[in-house]
Image (cartoon, rainbow, N blue to C red; front, side, top):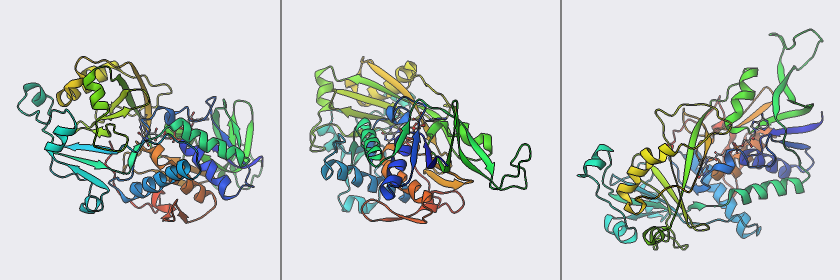
Length: 422
Ligand SMILES: Cc1cc2nc3c(=O)[nH]c(=O)nc-3n(C[C@H](O)[C@H](O)[C@H](O)COP(=O)(O)OP(=O)(O)OC[C@H]3O[C@@H](n4cnc5c(N)ncnc54)[C@H](O)[C@@H]3O)c2cc1C
């Protein structure tokens, strides 16, 4: 064997998994492969970079909460700047209640509640859209409340990628970029030398990968190939329970006085900036980026948006013009006549069954993906879970000491909890 383990995919999940394996056992020979020239250039590099510690499912909440503690530990104790901005996550709802939050969240101060008067004062927002003909045509509803998750914000993914990669290499991990894995090498556990092995009566397992140039062998192969996973798993009959879906992001400059005031909204957080804000249906979201005085805006469309793998998905300007803009302008008239100055598109690796991530081992392959809209913010914990699967552990201690049963996000003994995907 050339390596103990090959990790395919140097996005945040592959990086975190490779880093955690080396951290646990520095002697393990770990090779990290990616087809791109550098790490983090797949969908990790296209994200909105946001995090929050409260989800609908307990699994996602635990994975995110412990990961965020890890981010703060890296930045504050290890003194590795991740560019964290704890700006909060503000859900503006058309109902008095939100399904996402429990009373304890509010009592413990984990979620702040804003009444209509507060929102009117803090944001120059149009709360009352009902009665407007256009707004009714768009199916928009008045905003009744704001719920702000406090342990939430954004960070720099490129810095996070640097952290994982530099620490992995410092621990002796090897990287191989510009290398596309063409297929997984499947062999019988006991080779007999017959043609076309493995046969139906043989136990088979993956013993490495084939690239355009060579075959590389390892005791285990970890696939952290995100949206591309079906291209390697399906040809050998392994399931991913994942489908890729395009997601887009539009950048608007805070050029006018009104937009600057909105960007630097006071009263929500110590950064004195607009929190990551989500409007009521159709759940348009907006991130205020203080480093560049811009708003990053997007919306996860479901019905009508097909599942399809795209290597280089393109943003659609009409998605902004006819989809997002009319809704956004009704609530925030400050955006009237503004045009995106930049836009890009990536893909979610979606588990559309329960919306929670998947990590499991089968026939020598450990598969870790389906992080849907939250791979960045759960990457430390999910990487730790994948590393525990590699070491054959049933439980893993997440950052901060909380225990997690790895089979909860597996397939056969999965703990099924549904997530509300944004
Ligand atoms: C527009 C958008 C906004 C998002 N916003 C957020 C957010 O705010 N917060 C959040 O937490 N998440 C967000 N996400 C989701 C997040 O980006 C993903 O969940 C995360 O990046 C998944 O990481 P990954 O490592 O699984 O995938 P990737 O980063 O895509 O990594 C997979 C890697 O595998 C490599 N690869 C694939 N096939 C092969 C092969 N055959 N050979 C070699 N290499 C291969 C690819 O080159 C790639 O580098 C967003 C995503 C998008 C598209």
